[in-house]
Length: 102
Ligand SMILES: [Ca+2]
Ligand SMILES: [Ca+2]
Image 1 (cartoon, rainbow, N blue to C red):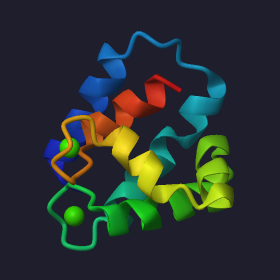
Image 2 (image 1 turned 180 degrees about the vertical axis):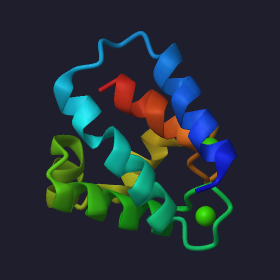
Image 3 (image 1 turned 90 degrees about the horizontal axis):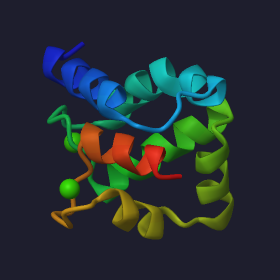
């Protein structure tokens, strides 16, 4: 597992001011695995297509927000929210920030 990604996710988790609920913690480990699995080209960034795979895996695992995105087929809207700097790529930090704001 790429060390940089783990460091980024851990740092984001530590910096998050949102209270770590059990529900969030439950998907934390899986989210890292799904991120790596969805990152088809291994650059530790998710394109819209890779993000779609990531959400589908999270939804299959029962993550509420991902289930809702899948039901609404709102991948593009969700991705635009996650991609805070609008460069068309979702970083682990952007994913964490979006998760914390929900
Ligand atoms: Ca990628
Ligand atoms: Ca971005």
